[in-house]
Length: 206
Ligand code: PRP
Ligand code: URA
Image (cartoon, rainbow, N blue to C red; front, side):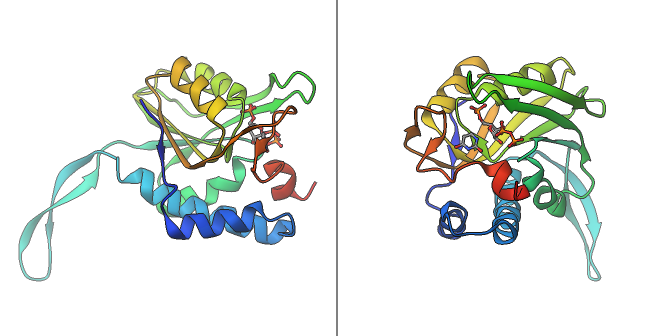
């Protein structure tokens, strides 16, 4: 599937500018990433499937709806944790699993270090990571999560590089990809330009 991006969303664009600003210190960075995540969750949730549910208002009985399938949220450690509470704000019933992957600074290849999830069988899995750069970390996480036989897989980022988008679209055409924006390119160290620097370091003040 082609990536869905929300580059024309005025409030998202303003908040991403706060994240990009090198002067934005960790507390404001964390709060802004949380706010962006609430907005992104609402946008992605527009694609959820509903089922009919009858409801009685104080006046009449009418046709309403309920979301059909439970969601499992999977933040990719560490920076994905910065998106988790925003998604749990709107999806408080969602179960959460964790996947730990970090990039080797020299090779840019993903290094795997943690995996703990609830059962993914027939679940709608939403993978959270603010940065999609080379795509190596997300490719690795998606490949591993597929072993759990989820019903659907979505991957949601804040800033994506065209290089990473291409890799995921090719390797995982079955995954629904969402990002707030697609930036220009990667630099020779694998950082997204213009980007925001290292999301995990800025979120955790490390
Ligand atoms: C960042 C980011 C992604 C990854 C993206 O994590 O949160 O997981 O890089 O890069 P890629 O698309 O080239 O794989 P990082 O490895 O810096 O770990 P951290 O979140 O613990 O800081
Ligand atoms: N990971 C980040 O945190 N930032 C980038 O620009 C690329 C990968």
